Structure formats: structure tokens, C-alpha cells
Image (cartoon, rainbow, N blue to C red; front, side, top):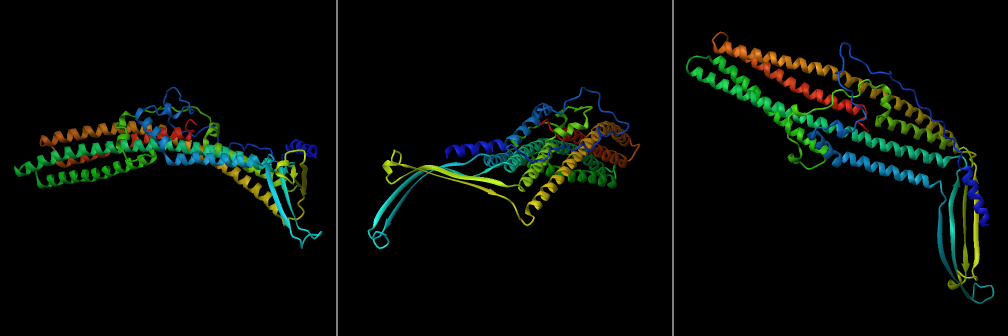
Length: 467
């Protein structure tokens, strides 16, 4: 009997290599081979930086590195993603365990008393039976690969979950860097606004003194006051923005509100690589974690088809046990014990399921087709994101240079207007207009500088974030 059971095990193991999973075919890349270019612009002539560079090397600025490292160590979304990986790993191990038989040990005792009235001989008696055995639980011989297909699906689900964590990490690095850049930009705008208020307040005080002396007019004083109050409105706005930026950054960093954890630097101090992955082909999108996740999802749905196909074929299950039985506990493991065994093979052939198996196969095939479409959609979205950031990189660089020239020109206009007013050649209105223009142009310069740095961060993210 033991030889028979062993033979069945070996036979099942030799035949369980059969698989009905369709051959996986990688969909063609549904995008152009190169990125879209903006006519009339060229990337900066600098040594190219690889897209596979790790975040520590890309964000080599100490301040940026500090906030990103804190976020990676404490962010709750990233911790949830890590726990999702552990959950998927456990599910895969559960599915894989079905490929192997489950053997259990058991021991038991049966005490029985027969009364005089119910005994055939008319005399009551007592009996004791002790048993111990090894039992084979209901084990399915995977002749047609159903269980193996389910295990393959679970494995790809697990791998997709790993990629999902990389997606979260990639997004977290970029979001933290952008949040810090926004904070530095708003702090710079706040400082600029305070300086503007101080200068306008001094002008207002001088005009007020001149009005009392009969030199300036009430109209000039009123206009100067409107400039001061306008700047004060912006001051309160930027103060609010700065505090909200700190709150957003603390949430991403996953730590209690403690401003000592935020490095104090200027937006002008931040430096990032300018020429990321120059000449990189569009095939590089396949290395993005969200694209890899979509591919594993596709492989999992492909494996589900194999499991659905196998359901059309018979399934063979084995249940058995082998052990000892004795009327005395002391003799259970001696020569006085009797051998006891059972072997219950069972074959189940699907005959009529009301269309269930066919519907399950159709469902698996439809889900695979959806996975193909989603895979292609992810790649197309990734191509659009990279093309957008590349277009922004070349245009923002030129836009910032033009804005700096505009600020320099506006500064000259303001200086000349102020000198002409002091010389009595021009009215205070020209000074006020020049001052307002200069302030607006300086605000735009800070905003564009923040956008340019964020563009480099986002370009690093959409190229895969070095993962």
C-alpha cells in the first residue's frame, strides 16, 4: 500500500508540469521611437546624466537630500505600500502551497460501553481502541496545471505589488522635492514683498512729510499708500502660503510638525543636473515602475486563462492515511498494534456546469484584453509625460533668461523714473508705475525659477526615478 501511494505521488509530480497558460506576447510599443521636439530649441550642451542615477546622486543638494530621506523613512503611504508587498508575498506562498501535499499526524482514542440489554450475548462489555496515523489531506494532482496557473498568477500579482511600491516611492521623492521647492519659492516671495513694503513705506513717509511742507500733492500720497497696502495684501497671502507649504511638507515627511527638521536655505542655493538622459530612446519607458507593474498585471491575467482552461478537464484528488491501532495505549507502538490504512482516490469530471467554466474562461480572456489596453495606455501616458517635461525644460530655460533681462530692464526704468521725479522732471505716477512693474516682474522671475527646478524634478520622476 505504501508503495502504491508513493507511486501515485511520483506520477502526479511528473505530470504536474503541464500548463495551459498561453504564451506571453509582449505588446508592441504604442509610441514613437523618439520624443517630440520643440522647434527652435536645443537642450543645453552638457555631458548627459543617466536616467538610472539614484535619487541620492540626483538630489545631491544637502537640504533636498535631508527632506527626501526623512520622507522615505517615515511617510505613511510608503509604509502602506511596503505592507502591501508583504501581503502579496503571503498570498503567493498560500497559492504555491497548494502544489504540495498536506500531511497531518493524528492520534485518538475511542472508549465504548455496551449495556446488558443492547449486547448480543446479554452481557455488557467495555472496549478501548487507540489509534495513531499519518494522513494525506485532500491533495489534487495538478495534471492540467490549474493550481500551477493560479500560483503563476499570484507570483505576478506579488511582483506587480513590488513595482507599485516603487511607483509610490518615485512619486514621494518628486512630491517631497517639489513641496520643498514651493516652500523656498514662497519664502523668497515673502522676503521680496517685505523688502518692497519697506521701500514703499519709506517713499510714503517722505511724500507725507512733503505734503505737510506743501511740496507733494495729496494725490501722490494716496497713490503711494495704495502701493503700500497692495504689497501688504501680498505679504499676508505669502505668509499663509509659507505656513501651508510647511504643513504639506511635514505630511510628506511623515513627522510631527517641527520646523527644525526643515533645512533653512534659499531657492538660489538649489542645484540639480540640467541635462538628464539626453538622446534617450522611448524604449527606456519600459523601465518605469508603473510600466513594469502593468506588465506584471498582464502576465497575471494571462496565467488566469491557463487556470480557466484547466477547469474544463478532470481533476484527481487523493485522500489517505496510514497508522496503528491497539486496544491498549501501552501496546500502541509495540508489536501488538495492528496496522490500519485507507486510500481514497477520486476523479471529478465536469459534465454540466450551466456554462460556468466557459463564462470563467471568457472572463479571464476579457480581463487579459483589458490588461493589454491598460498596459498600452500606461506607456502612452508615460510618453506624453516625458515629452511634456522635455518641452518644458528647453522653454523654461529660455523663459527664465528672458525674465531676468526683463527684471533688469524694469529696474533701470524704476531707477530713471525715481531720479527724474527727484529732479522735478517727472511726476510721482511714473515712479509708482515703474515700481509696480518691477515688483510684478520679480515675482514672475521667482515663480519661473521654481517651475524650472520642478521641471528637472519631474523629468527625473517620469523617466523612472532611478528605480
